[in-house]
Amino acid sequence: MKRVTPWATALAAVFGLLSLVGCDERRIRELEEDVSTEVDVRARFGEPENIWQEADGSRTFEYNRQPAGHQNYMITIGPGGTMTALRQVVAPHVFDQVRAGMTEQEVRRMLGKPAKRMTYERKQETDWDWRYIDPPTTEMLFTVTFGPDGRVLRTSRSLVQRDGP
Image: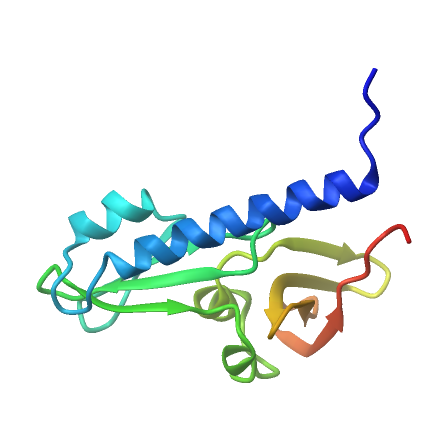
């Protein structure tokens, strides 16, 4: 029986992530704002995790790469049926917009589906985590803590801890 080492497992995970990122980069290059259509977006990214209706008649498609990846994409289709924006939203400049008092839905619309949700009954708090890369290669977690009313209490950023040597 062949023994799989932790290094081999880690290496396989890295190659898996790189192939996912590589596919996304190719898909993104194939799309052009104000030219590509909803059909083009769906052909490259598939069915969205969620579709958010916007006040101006546009729709925002949510494409998640959590928990295996470090991105979440929001792709906006304007009222005319063409793509008007493609944003990678799991990023520090977006995290800076999360404020105390925001609702769970407001945060979800901003960042997409979290990688992990944990509820702490005694504290009456729930943490949502998103994985991201702090350039060039540091793997990080952005955590939003919600109170019992479903509103943001605080946010934090931390280094992802790895098991093993």
